[in-house]
Amino acid sequence: MYFFLLNLALLDLGTITTTIPRSMANSLWDTRAISYAGCATQAFLLLFFISAEFHILTIMAYDRYIAICKPLHYGTIMDSRTCVNMAAAAWGSTFLNAVLHTANTCSVPLCQGNVLDQFFCEIPQILKLSCSDAYLREIRLLVVSAILASVCFVFLVVSYVQIFRAVLRIASEQSRHKAFSTCLPHLAVVSLFLSTAFFAYLKPPSTSSSSLNLLLAVLYSVV
Image (cartoon, rainbow, N blue to C red; front, top):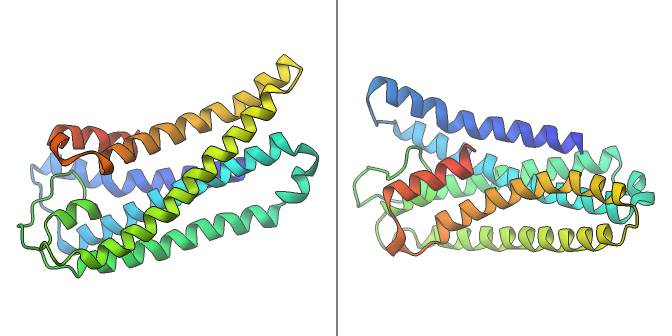
């Protein structure tokens, strides 16, 4: 658990340093400008760190499932090598995903100006500025990413259903409290992260506003 918490902490640190320092500098210097290379780098790093964080949170749910539902086999299933391989797979796959998305997005011509409705560069906001028929190739990558994210989400839900079923069968109240104390903080982080991100990107265009977009972005990328 602490190994995965270390990974999560590093990813959170990466996410916050990708967006906040630049935003603070813009506020201090009273400017909203960012270079093309800086914008592409920020979009890449943000996608990489947030995607990797979602994967690590999914792995942590599996780790809690094994610890609570199969405690006698935990040391065998979740040995050090397995944990390192799972973390490496999460970092490596999301790095490749971020490279593909960023390269594809940055090659799309922009026809709607160069002003982003956000305090940092992110791929959905960049695509809003693209030509209407130019972003279709990026849509294919987004569909693949959405399918992978859906698989992770289903895995998270199934893991926690099994966890809660196992915990509720525990006779000792102290043991139930111990099990819940290791799961509820993780579940709270997952809920905040996913609910704000889903609402930010899946809400109807009619409910979109600059202040709402800003609030949701602060929740899923900062808080």
